[in-house]
Image (cartoon, rainbow, N blue to C red):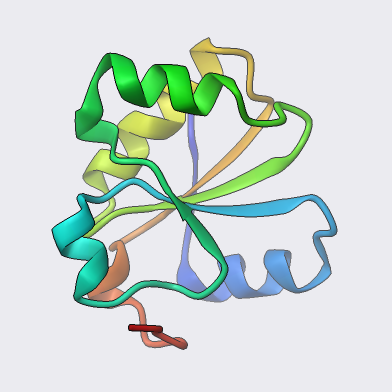
Length: 104
């Protein structure tokens, strides 16, 4: 089960997490509209390509996962946990409710 967290919880955790990795699971077109800085983008809609790409990541790190609204990122977190990832955080409300820094 994914750990659903609010933006304030996200910012609080990530500020002190030396093993934090921000994972954006949206499409390239969505990322082009703006993204949370310092992220890795792997489109969850990529199916097997998503699984292959994610499986190469360090499973010991803590993954802060987001999408547009929080639905795809929740699915991505569940999938990642089945692949052996211990810590995944799903950003509730996704980037559409994010009021922090956005890069373009």
